Image 1: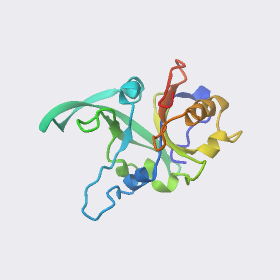
Image 2: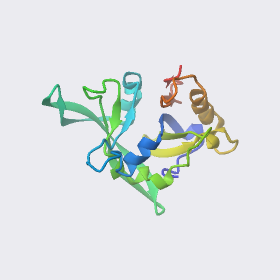
Image 3: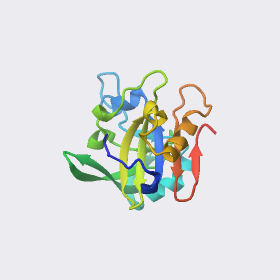
Image 4: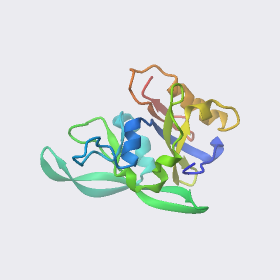
Length: 201
């Protein structure tokens, strides 16, 4: 497990999550472009950006200015900055993290860029997905404000004793919601306010 996150809801302030597909694995391995021509986005995209903005600002609390192309022109934009935490060889490790707002081409998708540069997103840490066993990337914010990335399989969420029941219930409800085929599960649950969002509801 990348983050060794708490499974008890009393230690968890909020969780932002998205389903991981095969294309996301290629991004982690810096193989997101399937041809040998180079390029290809190395980011985790979060649709429903407008609905997620509130929790994104809490989990990435600083605002920094970055230069990005918008409407064909280089402009300064606000990027949200935080830190990811994880365990590595028994030690706590952290690295600055950034959540970028949507581009012109993808107006509903925010993103965590350059995911292949974060050891906490190592593909070896991701449970094997399969029929009836989807995998979620979970950004777990503890009550101290620290954010710990973690991958969880659907089967682990449905198994008793692995996750606190209130944590598992919130994620399973979104996994079970109806959505178009091929649409990734995306949402959040804030345990301090009882607010939540699921893109299948």
